Amino acid sequence: MHKPKIIVIVGPTASGKTSLSISVAKQFNGEIISADSRAIYRGMGIGTAKPGRDSMQNAEGSRQYLVEGIVHHGFDIVNPDEHFQAFDFKEFAEMKIEEIISRGKLPIIAGGTGLYVSGLVDNFDFDGGTAGEPKFDALQIGITREREVLYSRINKRIDEMVDEGLVDEVRKLNDEYGCEIKSMTGIGYRQICEYLNGKVSLDEAVENHKRDSRHYAKRQMTWFKRDKRIHWIEKPEEAIELIEKFLK
Image 1 (tube, rainbow, N blue to C red):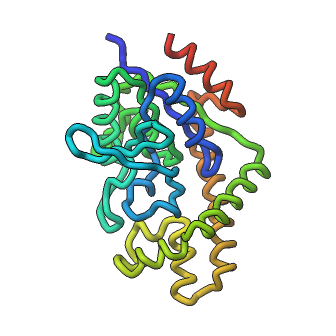
Image 2 (cartoon, helix red, strand yellow; image 1 turned 180 degrees about the vertical axis):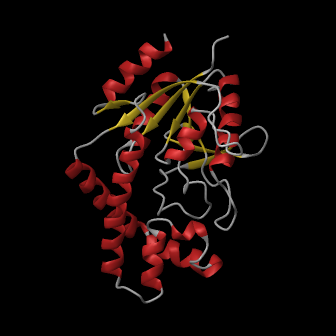
Image 3 (cartoon, rainbow, N blue to C red; image 1 turned 45 degrees about the horizontal axis):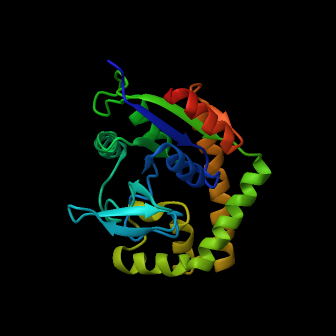
């Protein structure tokens, strides 16, 4: 019996996963599942770099997020003070993959949270601690960029976040939940919280955000480079070629 085929797009923060996954979804009739441990939180749009999206109502009345006409899953699942971990993501993603396939579409998992991706691809038993028989035939594609190019993209993205209202977003969340909950310790939120609490200037907070994001990107690449099944690409055309062969 053939396992269902899925596409997995990984890479460090600001590498271009969102734009590539949308291009792939358009070309191969896909829907996207976000594998980002921060995009799951409601009210955290700017600091998690959720792509611009508009919502629509489907037949059941529940909300679907559309980005450039492509359905996205995995945004705004829980409130910032609610518990959600890799086990929960695995259950959520497996359910969504089944739904997407039942609609005759291609499931595309895109994100930089390594444990989310590994747990799904390798069918982790999070209770027993050992990987199981994989449920899916997964083509994993990684986006690689020159370090200086990636760091420049990270810095630019953070400047854009600040321009879009990151400080106000964090202030609102702090007013409602405080800065001590787990979701507020993520990169971007932690640094702006330090500014709001008077520990650093805004300029210092932004520079700390950039520095910590660069360090996070290095950790992400270390994680993903361990998986020799990942096909590393530099251009979108390479991904399209790999997927065409995979789906034959």
